Length: 347
Image (cartoon, rainbow, N blue to C red; front, top):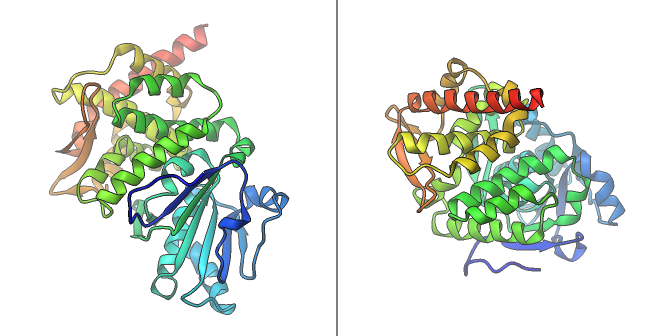
């Protein structure tokens, strides 16, 4: 189905079961895809035009140097300004392919065909394209919205459980921003992702992006869980998946909020999330290792970071806080996860 998005929104959004060749570009195009889904693309009988490439994608390889062979291949065809790039893969792939499309001939069209739960509900939409630098995540990029997003839920059947769990935390973030704790409970108790979840998350994000495409105001709310989450992800040497880091950052943000005078979240919800995240306890870095990453956060300004503080009884708040404000939530996070892990081992 084609999702209803705000009038004039830059991206068509489609959520369907099987990939449809009718949604591929009509004019010249090339594909950049994750090797992990190449066989599934071919099984669906979908084309691979000249200049297409399938690549092994990791966060460690999310660098500008990775893009250069793609750009050279497009120039050799040659692709012109009327061409479209089709990105097939998870959030790392769509981030990089979107940036490459923004750079090639100063910007050509592209389509996002996300294949992971995380990229379907978040990374594939919004036009924030990027690569990493040694100093941190997504520090070089461009706003370049895809012309079309096609989320095919059949791809989710190919994912390992860890990838599904990773994407679940981006959905959980959306539920918290919507103040829908009942949905958050459903997300945690239902094993198989539902298309309705993806549609709701995309509808929510498209509305925010339409109102604030360049992240000057309301769109910053979508960074809930990402401030400490990005630091945790980087400090782990990307041993943590992005969604796992967001889950840890979301829990830490819920622990920070009452320290800033806001109403605390229900203890049973905090406990449930902590138990779910407890297997990641050994990958949560010490505070001293996290602080340097927070100091380089791209949302930092004048010694503070624009932090998203969630509330169970109202809209989240954006508050400038010094990086050191995350020290106590990090301690509480480690303590909480460690206690859950110990109980699990004793059981």
